[in-house]
Image (cartoon, rainbow, N blue to C red; front, side, top):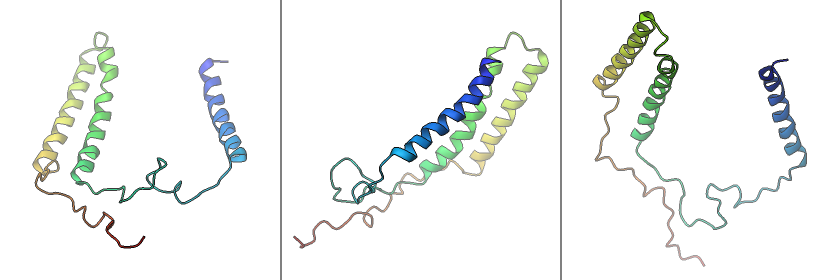
Length: 133
């Protein structure tokens, strides 16, 4: 039997076996500090999740497809001396489609980031000046 076939068969079995052992043997004792968002052993005095500009999420969402599409060029780069004119034409067509998509994003202002827009973090910070002791 091929080593790859054995690997494909054994990996899910090993993964599910380890998951089953964890579910059977692990002790589940939740408490308030362990379930919190900021777990380092210290009680947090203010909100740990701060607001940030949504443009960063937009840049990440636009970067990911282009990064994946660029990684599809790796097989061409590795076999550049073996492909014919047809392969080169297909890669150039692929790059042309990427460039057209990027120009479309630029024309629709999808990458426009407002530098003067600061997030409102005042509503997220707890009032630590309370008089309770």
